Image (cartoon, rainbow, N blue to C red; front, side):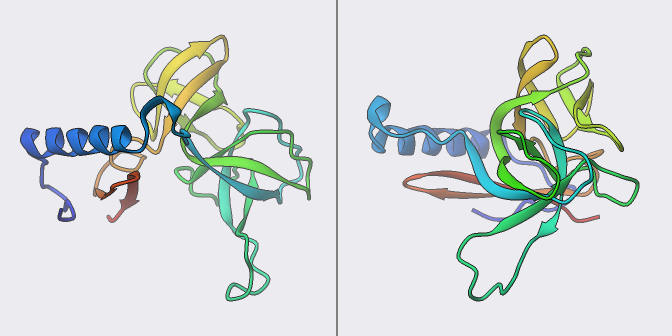
Length: 185
């Protein structure tokens, strides 16, 4: 595998080979009896002034490192976004997280998230909101809906925003698939 660079395309055969390898590795892992991890869940501290609720969408501002070389568990800092935040680096709350408290958030994969209930297949987080605005583009893919809550997958595509200058790096292992998306404008 090689890294996909800006302006390059992935050939259909290569993408089909990736999908085949992922499917084969899932089958080798034990089929229906294996444990499925549809999301990456981490601990996060709500550093904003507003409480976050189940399925709220928030931004990741960084990590709460006390001593990175000795800290066993990474704790991210999350909040409702303001004008200074990168709106593509998001998390979704798996529980209520009061201000200045910690709780579980999803930082990649699939989960249920609050939305504006709009039409479209993609979502974006906008300044001041704790929900996704649904439309025709965005860094979050809408898979299914139930009122204002949607089953979402993120990050999707080339890493968010307009997708300009995005790179997708795939790493295949016998135990599964990890996808990393970065913007390199």
